[in-house]
Image 1 (cartoon, rainbow, N blue to C red):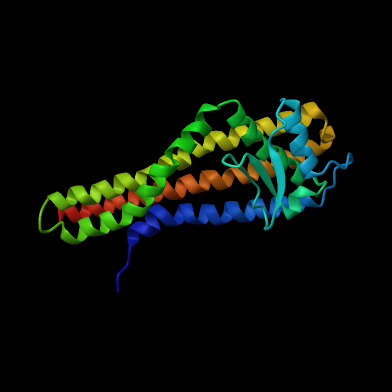
Image 2 (image 1 turned 90 degrees about the horizontal axis):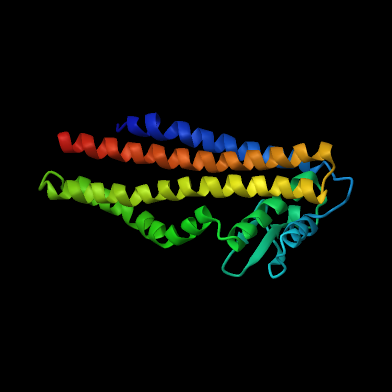
Length: 233
């Protein structure tokens, strides 16, 4: 029976962290989804208020189906808010909507990390498609020629692009959340005692990106150990 200790050692802890992070963001959102803001501002209205406060009026705000499917699409210049956020007046909804508006502000201001993330998406997608075929091909034929060790390492390099993408994503997400809280406070979208709910939702969401980076790094280390061990053998 084959036992892959490398997965247990390098990847499984990060995967468990990712499961916890996703469960945590879901439970935190549900908790503060029930905390309705006293000013009764909806998620869509909050996003519009954040944009207007920065002189941005050409970004559309639309409803999208699903749970926590909220995102800003720079190609169409539209903020899409999920059913639980668009018309909700909860502190959770206002936090999420303001966060997505924060991404729109990043593009409007040419915030360097988000421009970099957008620029590397094509090469990251290509790398993710090539990574495992190259690693597998290199491992299978490594005994034939040392050249195939290079093929395997080329596959690892392709996979490393995913980790780079996750790493670049972190500052964009943290920055969008900081912009969101600052906008909520300056525009008075929530009462001072309600801001904590929005902040906790955004902090929980940020942990999912930290966990995604951890998974990528764990998988990267695992591939290096596997290829390095096979090469020594």
